[in-house]
Length: 173
Image 1 (tube, helix red, strand yellow):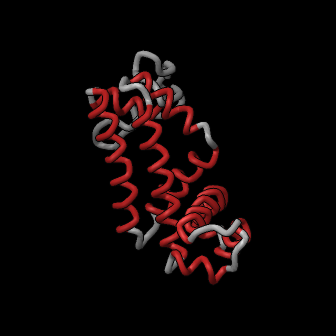
Image 2 (cartoon, rainbow, N blue to C red; image 1 turned 120 degrees about the vertical axis):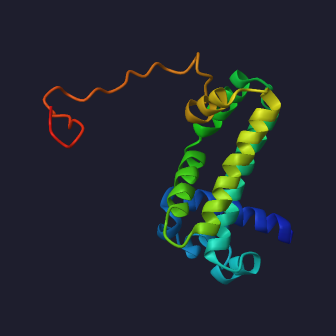
């Protein structure tokens, strides 16, 4: 069965998502993506003018998957927390989020960084609109996938007594 251009483009984005998640932007070759899809490397560039455009599409796909999960979850912080945690358990989703953050923090990636920030802000808005949750509950949702009451207790790490703590004026006390 022959795939339509739209189906082939979709297959390229799915393959790019997996490859970029596992190897990052710089560690992934367009040749590896093409091989995963079963097309020639030049064929990829029919859909995406550059490797970076393909990385952007893979990043967008990650945020789309998160938005879909939050949109289909029960409209409670607990329901969204479960959906978010389940999706983050998908190794490729978690790795793609990390790769996107690392690339966004790279020099010269201001436009991509804005795109990643927009993705997170859109998820924040979606969760907030659907649940009516407070900013603190939303922060806990995205930090842990759980509301604050259900989040694991974290004991603050105290500095060992043997480390001198500078007092005002730079003198150790």
